[in-house]
Image (cartoon, rainbow, N blue to C red; front, side, top):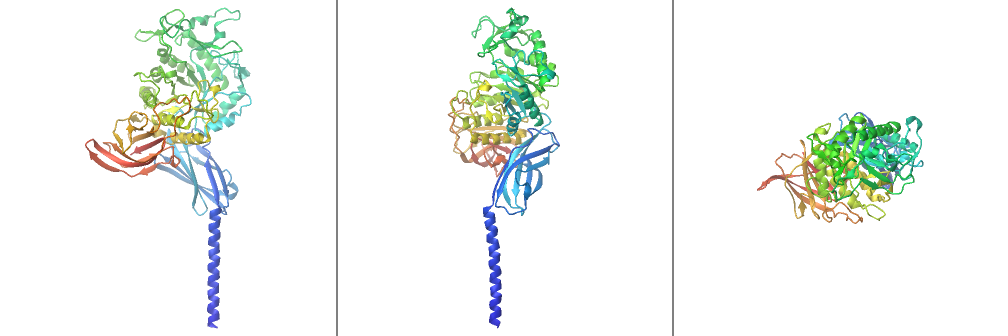
Length: 630
């Protein structure tokens, strides 16, 4: 009997053990068959006011999951510092494409990295993703320029604005939206009687497309800037109905005698025009009658369509000019005659800003010629189009990464007294990387290296627009080269990074000359070809070291044929950074890995004949790493 009872007890125990084992196997099988894909699709706005509600649209696909809820943990980081943590409990019926909402901190002009962790109902991590948000009550401190140039009636305006919003674009340059340069809106047109028009090339401009763009952009806190040259007119401005010269002929620019670049009136041929307006004739920016005329025309157009400001443009510097009467363009305060157009910019821009009132003003001194004047004017933001044959104020040609970086630095320094916060303005860099390329796609390496240099130096870029397009040519409507899927993903991360760390990148940081050494690796402090570029900066709280990887590329940013090479990834770089400051913590952040999150690096201190230093190891460098030391 005892044997029967003992057998029965063993049987029950084994049966229970088997059932428990089956439950564990089933649980493991369930876990092994769970498939989850999670992606943050940016944020609902390009810029937020302090205390605004942020909505993060998400893509979430899950199969094989038996739980009833998912937990979404949202963490906010400012540089390396965790700022907040919130949890959203997601019921099963809301698993598909959920949204996450939270309120922004009250601190103004601050960038944050947002990390969302997806967990199962028991708290196990299933997936993560990051994005960034900019909490700024105005766009002018951290401008992120994009562009539009298609205005046909069939254009899906809201969709293109949504695509640009993923890159955190907060200001749009509306290129060639106007009727004619001297008459942005057709004569007599106002907000009450808008209708479609054509531009100089005969392209039809749908006013409804324009107003849809503008309305959709304003919902995203993007600013709408109406492009137009500051001193250009087309053929019809200089002849009346009978073909006789008009009074504005007296405003024209003429090549000064002896100018090797030309003779007679200063003009530029754009191309065939059905209306006969295929030429640009340039007038003296300082002529008071021209200023009164063009300021009124710009204001009429801005008011009628709801633009937020004027994006002024130029054609570059072509040597000494005179007015139609052969006299100088004007005189400086000390009585010196002005013959170079670039020397008229500050006065013109200050008068334009006064005429625009509360509207914004930006300006492009092409070739960065006259940049010093723009930097010391009352324009709201700085912007410059670079060409490799133009030279900086010290004579250095703008054909290298280093030359671009130095101009960004100089612009910040020039503009300190003219910036609202006293730390200087951030220069937006426009440069046509693959200008003559016939390839199907932009060259990833050329684009990402130029972005790395522009952002590390404290500037921005004008390169993205018309939805997911990237600019590669000076006449925007001719833009036909696309971003590859790989480049598009990298650019999303690049712009996330530029927003998340904007307070370390372009909030008054200035370059320093601290010595940097990397074991067994060629380096340079000025971006020499085939080196790792070591570029240190600092502010009151951090010292910052940018590493830019030029190990298998030269230092020229123009890549006409699209042949730049993807950088060789450098691993386990042993860095020695000389500093007299007491460093307590070292962090690494990069757009190239770890979803832009900051990683803590261990470091050691030492002293040698060159002074005090710290050492640390950088695990990997692809395009650009930022090490910041507290």
